[in-house]
Length: 130
Image 1 (cartoon, helix red, strand yellow):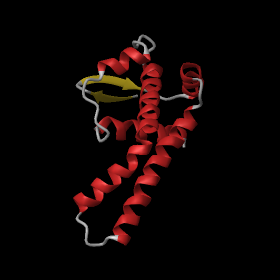
Image 2 (cartoon, helix red, strand yellow):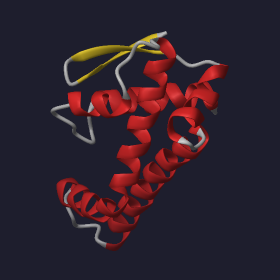
Image 3 (cartoon, rainbow, N blue to C red):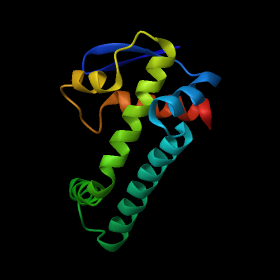
């Protein structure tokens, strides 16, 4: 079991064989589909950054990051939905008394795409399932 912090709240996360079934039951889609969304997002982000660096080698790292961020806006909604579904499923696996998914989302007042918990959940899920 691992613990993550989301917006100042600590949650246990766990992964086991039931997690596959639970994710499908909760969200009507397989957890591997959501992991694939995360992988595609990261891959697309990396490819775009390399493409910009090659085409415009004089740009600063900040300018490159800004262009990548603008490009990734098209993919961000799917990424956020996938990571929050995975996080919720892992938390629910650890604690069946967890509030409902929508209530959990309402409790996150400050959500940033570069929050530490996103990396932690992604790594935990990939380690468990891939």
